[in-house]
Length: 373
Ligand code: FAD
Ligand code: UDP
Image (tube, rainbow, N blue to C red; front, side, top):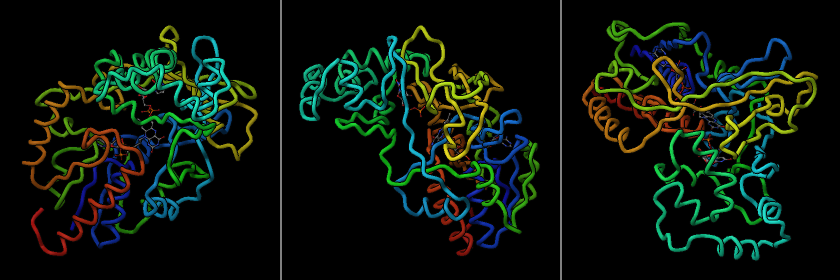
């Protein structure tokens, strides 16, 4: 079959590769001048530092199949994300762990004592936390919430934590040990040469052609048997029901001789400090040595038409609109909506790859059986 894939990010690349291996001819287009979507990395011309152009990406997963898959296409270097935060004039370790608790409260608590202490500050009248704020008050109490979460979250999401779902905070652990690894997962790492060469290797197949700097036009679909769409779901329908809300990020680049902050990610918990965080990219490749350093000061705001969509908002209003677009998508034959933007969900890279593999498998099996898609 002839397949068109819109978007050369992880979704388009993995589906394209699997379908090419199953004997289908795949054309992949992307509006951007590069492959790899939001995972795109490139060397900074001035310093040689490997830059995560659309924000830092750390690979972490418990899915052994996905880990084997990415290791087929890139050499992964060990990397664990150890985030710090500046709040109320001091620097602390994240995610909240025994060091954070002892430094913040000026204590020397051991694990069980810390657990009991935090439980004593927590609002135990909240039995089923629904909002971000309720989740924080229930599990870390008001002091840590105020210092580390309230201001940061207001800046990141542009609204009060009372309006956000508890699920956003559930992404972060609270640990009663000195383990400061940001993620729980068994497999963690960073591709040695960046994500873009890894995705180039995925795309390197004789049945795949890639056209960059190419916007989707409806007549492209007429030349193929099926379309996989990893662009914005509402964008496919020309926003006819309205726009699904996104937060976008502005990155203010600056350089520094030597080491600017001594770590890859420094968050800023205070609401008076406008950035959410500063990322220093050479610390994402600790096996390399660079004299110069490049940092991004990161600011979040509501996405306007034309901005890069980063975080789907998914509050009540957006959920209602999303349901209408999902209905529209279901009644559109010949197109499968995939990935972060095509399904309007926050998807980590490992989940994106797992879903792409399953989508391609399902499609290839149906094509073999001669089903209409
Ligand atoms: P995308 O990478 O967004 O690719 C979609 C592509 O479609 C884009 O290149 C776009 O240009 C193209 N496109 C859209 N519309 C059109 C059109 N009309 N015509 C042609 N092309 C079009 N995941 C992790 O596992 N670890 C992390 O540390 C991590 N950090 C992240 C940090 C940030 C700030 C963000 C936003 C995400 C992060 N992620 C992380 C998630 C990761 O970026 C996604 O899992 C991944 O990029 C999803 O790939 P995708 O192909 O679905 O989407
Ligand atoms: N968060 C916070 N303070 C921090 C880090 C995170 O309040 O120092 C909140 C914020 O609302 C964020 C959420 O916790 O959206 C999830 O954090 P994570 O690091 O997973 O954010 P993401 O990777 O989505 O940017």
